[in-house]
Image (tube, rainbow, N blue to C red):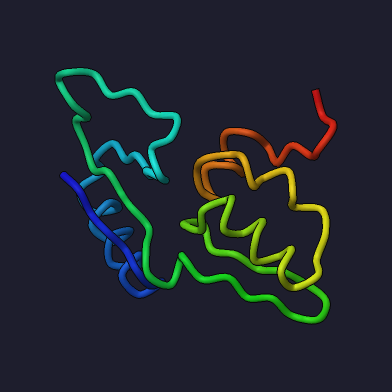
Length: 110
């Protein structure tokens, strides 16, 4: 089963169903590091989009939703004069996946 959530309201609705039915849940980013068995996934696959694809650049911070592509974040931050995210321009995947899988490596990390 596949569910898409484009807002916190929609995500809350999915969370309510998950709490009631207790299926295994897989939050799918962009699938850049994903292998699926031929038999599929026996539960709910959740994809974030919509509001979770937003980037907010302010004077003191860059804020990005979990569905934002890492290269897009790196380019938007650089365009706004922010540094430190250049490393992510070449990494496929999303902010949420990067935080989960990679633990936010920095340029120069082994």
